[in-house]
Image 1 (cartoon, rainbow over the protein chains, first blue to last red):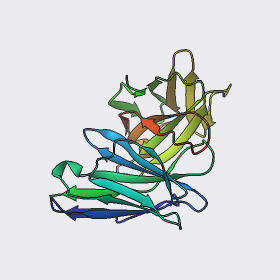
Image 2 (spheres, chains in turn red, green):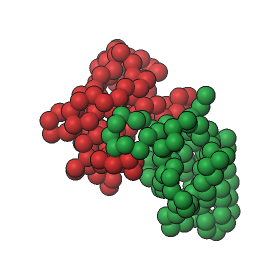
Image 3 (cartoon, one colour):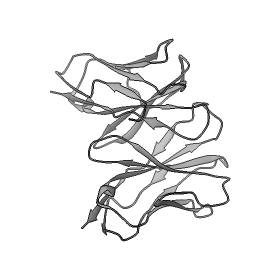
Length: 112
Length: 118
């Protein structure tokens, strides 16, 4: 167990729907990062939050949004889902140093 | 230009042999960190090893070592005494800047699929 908790582990939904992915960082980690891993795009950085504030933005679609709550858990909201949004969505957190990320086990989203 | 390049989509190695997974990177930032992650078929991303741009010695973590050649901008992962459980995808990654939590994202390569043959 990495200490980063992601729920749900699997999600199957229909096109046009909206889903929310949840992430609880490791205890003490202030930063949460979201990544999308698809077969054709590899690992793509979506967005980072640090202590409740957006810190960096990557290739995140306008249909996607995220937030980090006072208890530091984060949610990634995906709306108007398309087939191409099917992917593994990772959350990662980091301590206050440059060492690196700890990844959660991911949420596998399948859009049908 | 790609920040991280992994040119080996797939590799095979005999059990108990050593294997080198290639990674080259591109940055103009003098301060950066290089990372390797393992992703088994179950999907989770497992941190393996880290090398900072100012580190004088190559990083080692058990059977993993990072062959850091700064002038060539390469950060190859060497796995010694391969085990069946080493079969997985391996990703090289880089973070530019060494300041903590400054919004510097990680750049990942496309990965190398390693298969260990009994």
